[in-house]
Amino acid sequence: MERITSVLIAGGGVAGMATALSLVNRGVKCTVVEPIVETEMSLVDKVGETIPPSSASILLRAGIDHLLADPAHLPCYGNHFVWGSSIPYEKSFFGQIHPHGWHLDRPFFEKQLRNHAISRGVEWLSAHRVAHLEKRSNGWRVSLKDSENATNAVLCNFLVDATGRHSRIARMLGGQRTRVDALVGISAMLTTTDDISLPHYTFIEATPDGWWYAAPLSGHRLSMVFMTDADLVDKRMLETAYFLKAAQAPDTFIGSLLKGKISCNNAETTLRPASTSLLGERTGDSWLAVGDAAYSFDPISSYGLMSALEGGYYAGHAIADTLSGSTDAILAYEVIISQAFQVYLKMHSHQYATEQRWREMPFWKRRGQYSLTS
Ligand SMILES: Cc1cc2nc3c(=O)[nH]c(=O)nc-3n(C[C@H](O)[C@H](O)[C@H](O)COP(=O)(O)OP(=O)(O)OC[C@H]3O[C@@H](n4cnc5c(N)ncnc54)[C@H](O)[C@@H]3O)c2cc1C
Image: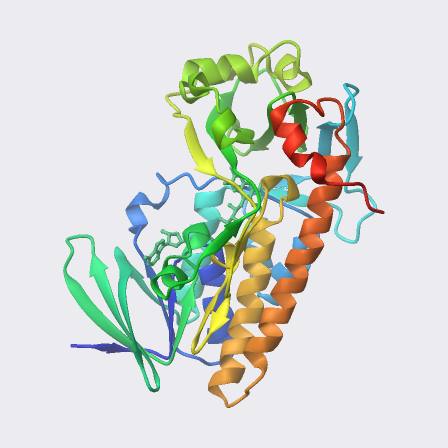
């Protein structure tokens, strides 16, 4: 039997859930389809946990600010940089309208979002993925596959691609992504010893072949990532022991801070794409893309999650308006997200232009096209 819903959202990450919440808040029935089953959720360590103070506004508008009061999430009071010179400096969030950002427990946050959305009436279909699309005059017939490859179908009026940087739905419709660079992140969730109390800051340090970031999380955990280009990856970094040693290199600020204070606690290193990339067409007839599926950011921006939340909020409103007869709501959504991407590109090139020490090294040379703009 075919299930019927108004809006089918492919992808139950932050962007998909933000879209779903925005829709149910407007009284629109929606169903989220997510391949990962709930019990696996905590095992899937989606990386990316730092959100800036400016996220407070979208969290409030989306009605989910209370989720961050849980002690699983830590306040983040600013950034410690070694960038542009070997002298560390600090950029505190003190004085901003909201005085701190957050270091999220990412799997827990996604679980909170999901439970909140379900309590608000969102239908959640885990262990299913969108496998095939058929356009109908009044929407879509979407074939889903479950974990045993059994197929069932959903009829919907509108379809949302919230499948992350692979843009699986848009690709099924013939869409393509443009990649600005080939950035990847090698990450590991480390454990800190009891005798180190790191300030609630994000640590960011440029090196000749890329840059590190370290984010202290609740429960003595430390999310550490080395960012470089795919072709520059030192394969040894994929071995946990080598990664751990590199993370404590005495000639880096972060390394000297962490020396002897971190362990891997069976954690594995993971290599993930982290490029700035953009889907060619982000909206179309009865569909749109949101979050990383529309475009993805270099983690230096700490903007991916906020963009997913904001994009989802506006996407939900645009779809609700469209289903009520508006003919320009999707265009307005496209304008909003395109402008946000342009703002990001400016911030991104400015950030890289402030590091000039290794202009001849491939990683930085490739970014040398960026010029400082005020
Ligand atoms: C190394 C690294 C570090 C980062 N650090 C930060 C940071 O500090 N701060 C920050 O804000 N951002 C950071 N990001 C970016 C951030 O993680 C992403 O922007 C964010 O995950 C985007 O959320 P999303 O919901 O759009 O996509 P995702 O979180 O990727 O969710 C997409 C979902 O779609 C599902 N899916 C896939 N295929 C299908 C299908 N066929 N049908 C149905 N569902 C499907 C997936 O299972 C997944 O759950 C980082 C990214 C990387 C790679």
